[in-house]
Length: 255
Picture 1 (cartoon, rainbow, N blue to C red):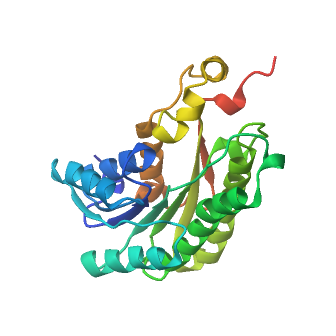
Picture 2 (cartoon, helix red, strand yellow):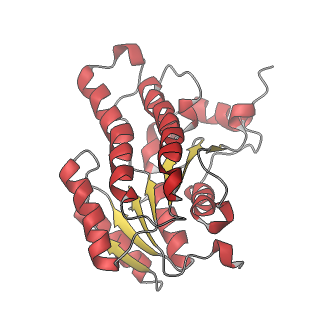
Picture 3 (cartoon, helix red, strand yellow):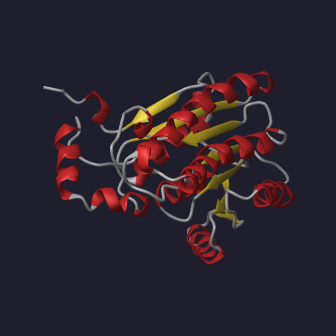
């Protein structure tokens, strides 16, 4: 494998990494030589993911963290640097979507939760990480094609993901002078626990498959490979971008 795609001696934090896209990303990075920090709200889930990666020879640390907590975000960064002595990249994958339905009917508590966990947490964690990242360091935010399209079902979630794409652009400008790159990935429908409500809607699932250029929904590994590219030296001149990885859903023929 070309050296630009290897991650030997590098350390990456991945939030929401006990399952789905986050775990697939941690697993891939560890297999390519990186040390990965597994993080999600529940300690037992973190431990299970940690043991799974270590069982195949990967280097990992588990740090439980609720991304809505300032104190826990700080602890995540501090524990990582104390343990490994460095930090090379951050993947903000953890997200919340407690409601399905019209955004005009979402109450304030749900709205605040979505925006805090999906947008502010990424902004804050990026700021905390930036003080430790070296030139060549990289931050990747996991957004969604829901941020590019209107939706009657997940409109508030889409609003947060649209804001995340703007955050990518802002952070890329703000941190570029330090040699830090910031990019995003906007997945389409990926088969994970997070998307169960959508995956269980057979009519919706059939429509997405028929509209998609590739005729299928995505798998976590599909997104993990895009994230790995953005973290790698191969993407050394890429910053401020959000890569759409949706199997061609957003280019669907409207006729």
